[in-house]
Image (cartoon, rainbow over all chains, first blue to last red; front, top):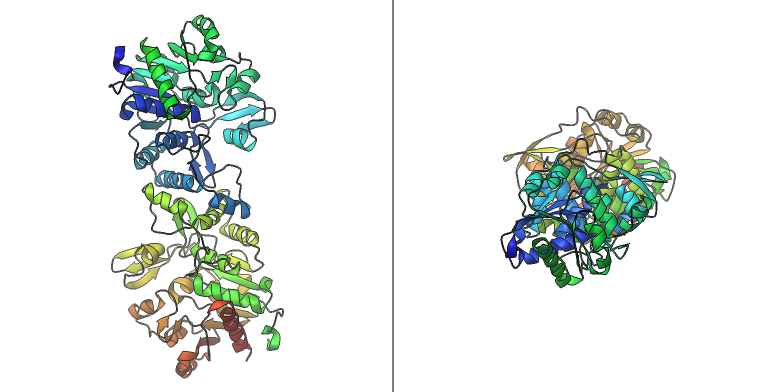
Length: 318
Length: 318
């Protein structure tokens, strides 16, 4: 693709996305290329029904971040209040999953669309449009496709594991009970086949990227994509930048490093981007048959996001 | 019942209730007798699905008013905000039915209980308990029982007529499509049969009390109740104290006065309480075979509510 990735050149980029890490990477990408040329394929494995409302945390994190409205920790809406949540707690309602007051409007709007017979794709497109986004944001599937986490305490729906129990349980595996029936949402397979670059965002390989690859046809579409395929390590210096990825690698018997992640993506990507602090691991990643590139992957601030996105685009053109 | 109605004496009172007028009357009653001896049978004809949430406006008005938390106009929660509603409007969602931020928690809690298989009765009892109420608040039925308003513009769900179109359409009649299947909620028929006093609150006879009487067995239970049966006129000086009752009486060909209302309740109540300003109508009401009592029925402030409730209780013991 030569120099096409520098500046706002017409390069189609499709990103396999989880939550916060992916959202920040996407926010960087849309500063490098035309936002309309970027497609995010989003995880729905951590969707939950919250007091009868359909909540899609990863999609919302992507939407809010692309709109520049994300909360300080990456999720929710910046400066949002909890008036409704506090009142709900007073009424004896479950309030362990924190939904802000403005955030709540997103779930009301989405659920109303679903209840009227619309798809999650349609609801997501409506929300993206209302937020003024030009980036294409797709759920990987319009079908129910939850992630179940297998722990010593039994099988837990993802948010029970992640939020309610604060990811404290040792993870022994995953189950995707909807996978057998889930079909890719409209646009998903085309976005993988037609992209100049397919990027696996710096997301959790097991519970963000994993569920995407479980949907019929997605893994094959990635494996056979014509575009350059690149993954960005979510593990830096043996730690997860955010979330339980490192603990999962460990409890599931993988090497707790960028190499451990790269091994999971062998055959699915051409290039593996790891952080500069892990430059010593480049040979080990290369030994897996991947092009390995070490750059600064820390996405601090808007400039940091853009810098990382540009570095990844440059890595695939080098 | 002699002097039992004065002070907090053990007298069982069941109230057929609509929204604001009924709620204020109930708030007065629970200052006269033990709140646990009062049962409100509430209209669900104006319930609506609002962005997938089950909203029961009349039940909520009764709950909030009994909890002393009602808004200045009688509905919603005093001092409530509209952060979520405003955000919903920004997202292109329907925002004509105004739901406040704290109010929203009620609908989330109720809907979660319904979604988990609970009844509207169970949800209402949970909310009442959470609000610290001892009064028994019952929906007239746990079944769907909407009020459809027949207008020159066609048939409208109640809230479309009432809130969205501000009750501007001329009303030609009503339809209760759920009535044939609706059965009384647990406790409703017993509360009518076992009460010392059954009161029809100063509510709209067509769209508040009417739907209650459409539920199988309720009209008969009222007609055959052993307790003293009393209705309070919602029409004072030829005007509705609140809402479209006067306009409905007119467009449906009834006399627009307390007498017009009394005629609708003939055979269902023994005593009809009208406002002191309508004292001249006492003979006309009496001519319908009802005991007619004129007292000040204006429920201004907590003392006004108590005064009216006490006057009604005294009227049935006179």
